[in-house]
Image (cartoon, rainbow, N blue to C red; front, top):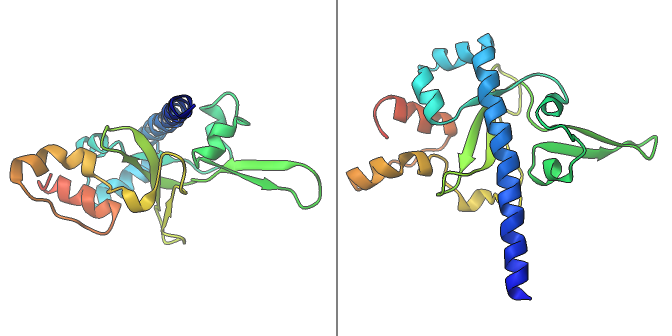
Amino acid sequence: QDRARAAQARAKQVTLTDVLERAAKAYADELRLSDAAKNYCKSRGLSGEIAKAFGLGYAPEGWRTLAHVFADYSDALLVESGLVIEQADENSDEVKRYDRFRDRLMFPIRNTKGECIGFGGRVLDKSLPKYLNSPETPVFSKGRELYGLFEGRTAIRDKGYCLVTEGYMDVVALAQWGFG
């Protein structure tokens, strides 16, 4: 029974990371289409190459843009992965669903295998909250992950040390300046 439970947990993890990878690809495609998001990246000194290396993306404005990515927007995996929020309507028995990330520069968070396990999203303007992170999920535990570790693993191995910074943009900016 323990083996069966472990196999079931692994299958669930693969399924959740597949969902998150699809969202990461969709967000990356949206970044290429959004002048505002591209201009924000340029204003922060980021090149297209570094954005691609870190898989940066853009979650467009709109409450249900992921419905264009996932044919079954009611799929429970979208909620379990943290991409979609489910909320009961106070006035009816209806449950409303909407995208967690809207109008944000997206930073895919990868595990040591390179699988997307969550996101950090940064606003392009002065709105709050400045950053919005994926919630804890079966594949993402914020306290156990270090953003950019997957992307920086070769440089860390080559140099024998790493720099630890506070934010996603700090990690990407350092990589842009040659600190892999």
